[in-house]
Length: 271
Image 1 (cartoon, rainbow, N blue to C red):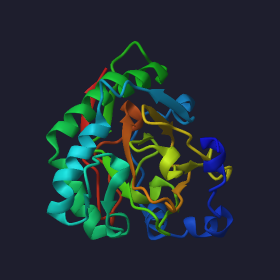
Image 2: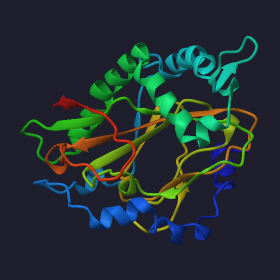
Image 3: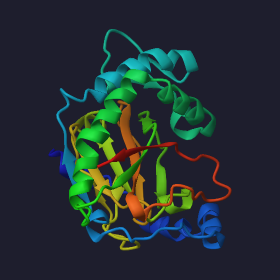
């Protein structure tokens, strides 16, 4: 079965959960909160979906993630490699690493301490992602400051499982309109048959899967466009990485949404 057909066949039952999306605690807090202080609107080109390619041989995030899991999994207690394989898909992960905020917090700390992984990540940001964003910013004559998430979010989704990520937009988690989302597979989607589902515009409801292999990064306006990840029914573990980048004058680096339990750290890239 072609990968695209397999992924489209796993479309979540979106109609059953869209109504609840607008009534979360974060959405209610957002309605009452002051707005970010920005001097420009995010350009249309940065609100559209796009994909960026990179060379996995130059940016070995998959290999670095495997080394991180081999070290941190048994240490924190959320999984381990069993047998000789060190392929990410073969990592045996506890379901709690996907469903428990406590384990997610421990896992974020592991990523924060993974120096070799983060070196590769920052090279990818500064050499691949931000230069492409610079091309899409209309005011190319002046310098632009890009506020990139640090560390990125590294997600583990064990299988087989019925656990999924509900439909949401990132505004309810304190992300701004002046941010752009990036999402990439580190495992083989032909094995897990799980990927991110995203609508093409705010409240459009035309959810489609990101058909991305390792070496390709999906870009979308996740602050306003809803997205979700269905359950991983395969016997493999899915690993993905995502991050957000605030765009120059469209982003308020001092703004936070009150009541949000976790705020991502950020670093700057100026081009």
